[in-house]
Length: 153
Image (cartoon, rainbow, N blue to C red; front, side, top):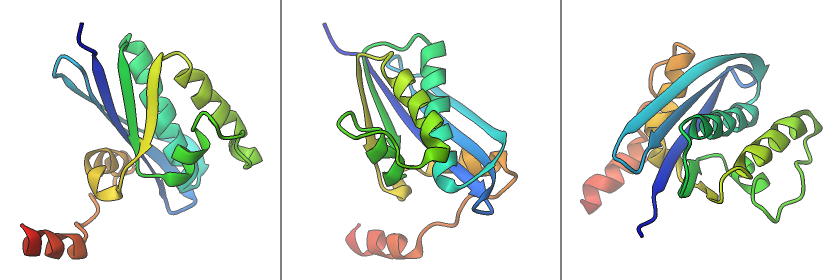
């Protein structure tokens, strides 16, 4: 029996920081479908809150899709990823504690779930969705990364 893999990229955006928030989610389902979600929230907050809300939106979308099997959620926010690891004590930021609790509750629904940090350049599609929900253009490509790719590629 092969394992089913749900791969999810999520990103949050706050503009300015702190400011209006939005999220972007890209879900790659085991059957090859690619689903996207994005929306601006009605809240004002910082980039870490926006990222946390993106993770929550991704988990809610997976739950609505009755996702089962292996779930890997990727985020470029190291604070959110670190705080949601199983061995980590509850979030020290009181203002975000309820959101971290909600994310942990949603994660517990899935048997084999892992939240992993990835570099920002590997999360571009989710970032573009989050920024678009705020009416912002995509971020320009990192010139240093582009030069390195040209040299090595």
